[in-house]
Image (cartoon, rainbow over all chains, first blue to last red; front, side):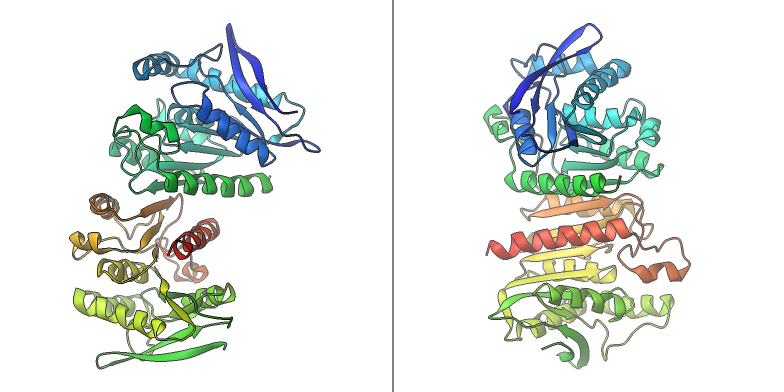
Length: 239
Length: 239
């Protein structure tokens, strides 16, 4: 199998993700990827393909329905807000992607990671907070505000937060509150701050926005990707 | 060559470090290791030997003279305070170790890292702030308070701070001030916080102190070591 559109549902909403699977023998670890607020586009699909090349079964999840992509930043914020303003809807949307990935016969359902970028990073964390049976959760430049902070205790995954140390979209107070919330739990978590990195540091197209709050940072991208892979190795070998 | 005591001087003070070098052809990258406040003991020597086994020339530095080791925690604090209370003396003591390492014919002087544990982590950072020609600086559970915060701009090394997220000896305000200070510079830096880790998380003997502020954390130890090696690979290939 190569890469194909995977249709799945969240209640009445029809979702269109990209399933990337380069084949291989037996059931393999799966990774669900939640995209930036712009929806399923080049960035998240490239990451899914890269994971498939490493032997994972990867699903780039559709947060909005029909694979909708935002026209511009205000539209992205509008789409994102519609999902995340209701935490139950938000979690259900994420869970639908997880279920769709787990339904693949090529996937080892005991070895699943959720990762995400920006809004998608928050989504991966939120899926973790819902108590979903995940081995690992990785957020890249994701918002760290939790609608129900106390739910951190429900996280069953090893958590890695990859954070741009100069990200103007993620207030220092949110970072501090996230860490404080995690400290109250027994969750295995790490937070890495990359000096000089701002929002969207993993996305080469971020520079095109012409907004200094968003910029690609090759070194933070490379380092955070390597740390994610190291966590996968830990998380998938220990179960 | 195997491992031997290396005598060197800081002014009138005779210092006794451990030089670990497993041999190899040509000049190789060097690592100076600054120990915990207890002085050159098993922990830092084991790390130096481990680095030598990987092909580095490693010097476990003596912070106090004659290889002195602290009898207990109050004694360690006394010895440490005597060195760090004068920033010029502190930097000179660190620089003496760097010079002793660089004087070895087996060392490539363009590829030097300084690392350290607790007080030694602060020392590695302070050596960096002095403007020393280092490729990498790594602090493990090191104090983050800087006597001259503005000197962060002098750092020429890539910096990695490996921090126990629950370390009661390193106040959150010091972490925040360190990050704020680094943000003002163009230094390439990272700070990784390991959930659940407290002080001395790399030292298996920490548990013997019977003090909950100090504890070994196998996962934080393994992760921080791997991140250090990844940084070395970056730092030593880019010069």
